[in-house]
Length: 151
Image (cartoon, rainbow, N blue to C red):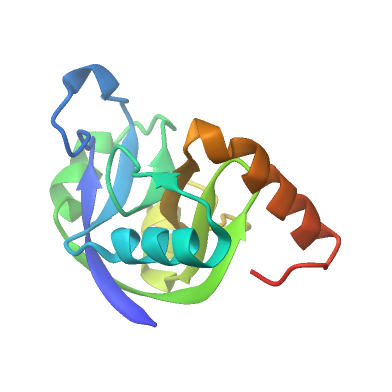
């Protein structure tokens, strides 16, 4: 599937809580409720309810990694619309759920900023299980690792 989002440097959570601000973060934030649909689907299919991420549906591009020219790149790329493809197969590590994405433009931006883009796992964050469902989420992850469950 293909969609787009807006590249945001130094993002604030969608509720505007400045206490959650983290420096040197850049994300692609969706303008639509794509994450709500996939969280709903996970709940219907696997009975796993996820907590909505603080930034809503997003792709983390820079994760608190300082950059000497941060303000330059922020002025160059902040609010840029980014097109990307995402895979419909759910991924989890038992603690978080996501969809893998493919976007050469994001890897190129990381590389231009001096970050290694090889091996970076770009993904669309869907959320974490609510505390009541954490153990079941880890159980599903273990089944998946043993190839007894196809997510």
